[in-house]
Image (cartoon, rainbow, N blue to C red):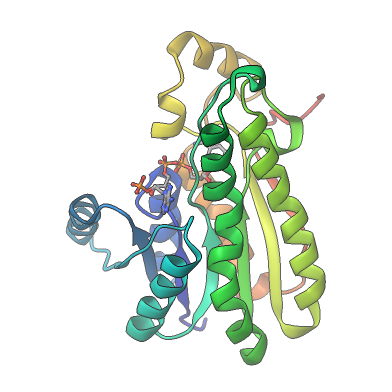
Length: 246
Ligand code: NDP
């Protein structure tokens, strides 16, 4: 295999950490962004203790300027980004009739506008080099909607439109663009949901359990591989069968 430079946004989070590790295990050079330096340095040294040497660069993905600067720093350190995983995301749940403009804008900016902010500085290089992998981490709720998540579902659904348009524009240039849509995975984001709500969610999942971050990372590594060159504009649902029978 060819060792590539990878940027995973939100790499310090639950799913992001698993993706960083999996792509490093595949032999790639892996970088992520941070907003809080102390938190990122603690994560980086915890990873080092496990044998992983990840590059970190400061950058809030909601800012086009910070995202471009973060890509510049990573490319200076590791070379051009060939694999981008748009993974950074947040929730700010609430029923729509009570939702504030901040709740709406924070979620759209972090989950969807970030895809523009981070992909824009890497896409031209991928097109010139005629090789690239761009993978969005969307959500089951971007496909089926969720009570209290009009903002999140809108952002995650938007990622699909972004993916299939970008896939068409770049299909002949060796750049594939795909989406992975996880169901409920046991990370801080989901463990913050009240226990009784979580129990109801798990009862609805045919496999009877939450997903593991590593199960999402496995799919990302598959889509990022050389062999996945003919998969573009696709969405991979990974949710323990939760998507069946909507
Ligand atoms: P976590 O909350 O564990 O991690 C989120 C990561 O995103 C953190 O590293 C966080 O960094 C980063 N981040 C958030 N906002 C910004 C920002 N403005 N700029 C830069 N980085 C930012 O979440 P998960 O690992 O659970 O989720 C990862 C992705 O998977 C998200 O897009 C989420 O929507 C999606 N997903 C998750 C599911 C789940 O069940 N967990 C289900 C379906 C989809 P910081 O430390 O600075 O906050």
